[in-house]
Image (cartoon, rainbow, N blue to C red; front, side, top):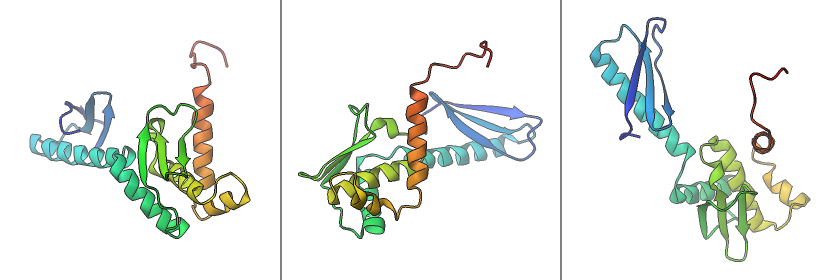
Length: 175
């Protein structure tokens, strides 16, 4: 994130708030027009740091996935689910995640990258539960009851899957 070009946009309407977002291969920072050059420099640094932290949370590496898996197992499964490895997988186009209980490996689809952390945590916890219970029967779902965002995450993923299958929206078509 530090190496990306930064575009600063000043606005007369903006009074005190500063906003930043990533736009493809650059960072855009929106600041009040009255900010001095020093204030601009300070706020650009702050916002890049904030965006970098956000991106790390939303796009964790394999090591971070393993740490999250251990933490989730401890918190929601009594530490009983112990994966041997947790990694991103680019070849999972029809599943959000998969688990092989025989070798205790978990793979999460790279399509999850950028989704809210509570969604990634749900998929990770879902796969961890498969280390303890193979199918999707009542015992399996009982393991996930402790995670407070199970239904919300499932709804989010269902919405993403449904939206992917929709044709693009055409502004010129009458609704």
